[in-house]
Image (tube, rainbow, N blue to C red):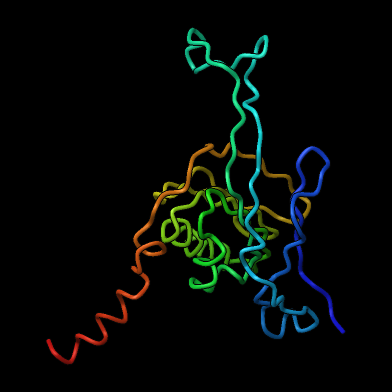
Length: 193
């Protein structure tokens, strides 16, 4: 028997969706962790909220002069844990139709910045905003265009807070239109050229 490496999303004290279990345990290090075989689409959840900047039930733009009705916003949130991000095809499936992906991780010392760099690619490849929270690594957020919103080395027990823009995911060539096969096309064409 073994254990699952899992995460659960909460909103206002309510559990959203099902528990997400890690699909790719780190070999040897997570020998007692059971790999999930659940459908990765179960990791996508619609999250609803209303903008916080309000007065009298109305939301304000930045200049505080234009008043607009308070509206509920819905974004699709997806989850993956640590080593799952080293599998681009898996993340492509997990991030399909997602706007934001949340991923807790634990890195080891100097690997933090290297792994963070790979995670930036996952956000761009899939057109999502990515929020990573890490123990002994880099915690931060990156937008769908690869712009690092924030990044900070964090260690065990540390709290990390950042503001993530509320935006839709974008249709990325890699994930939505078969861009992930471009490398294979190059390999096939190489003998011809």
